[in-house]
Amino acid sequence: MRIGIIGPIGSGKSLLSKKLAKHYGSTLLEEPVEKNEYLPYFYSDKETFAMLSQNAFYSSLFLMMWKTKELDSVVCDSTLFSNLVFTELLRLDGTMSAMEVALTYAIADEHLKRIPDVDLHIVIERPTEQLFENVKKRGRSIEQNQQEYLTFHYANYYNVLRRIFKNYKVPESRILWLPIHDMNNPTEFKNITDEIERRYALLNQK
Image (cartoon, rainbow, N blue to C red):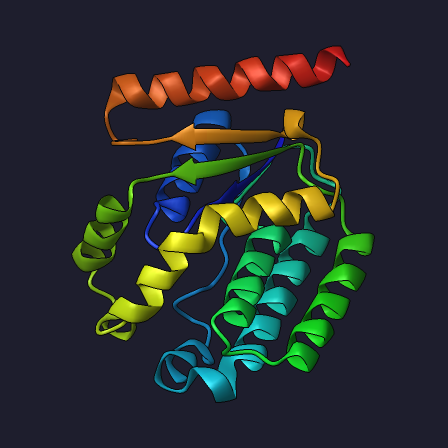
């Protein structure tokens, strides 16, 4: 089973990916967010570094997915669709120009042709106040003083993601919208894995 995790900033993508990879004995693909040398520059000067940082993320994620494209059991803590949400949000808030967005989509489209899609896209759903609290708790210095950016991000994230799934014709059966409160709670985590396995069984019946 190839699983991709999608969700807004602070939703717990990395934590859920690690827990699922351990649970299923799958290879874990972790997007090197904190090691991305463009990210601090993006947060300090979004207009200059938006396109550069976006394409740095696409390139690193593509390479990881390319190297593991033959594996049957993988959990990815991000996907190219997840990154497209960020591109679209940066277009909507006026940070990226139409030309920059078109170039970024063109690169992403070429990447998508060359790697297999995941079997199941898991979308973490969290209330906005919990997302803000999670960002505060993890304490990344580059995410501090980003209230306006995060407020816009959270207000638009899920609608933009739905539109991207529709534009790329991702079947609803392969998208699992998963409201999560505390995935460290054993009962809740079992409910999560039960839901994943139910959906995967349905997919295999087709």
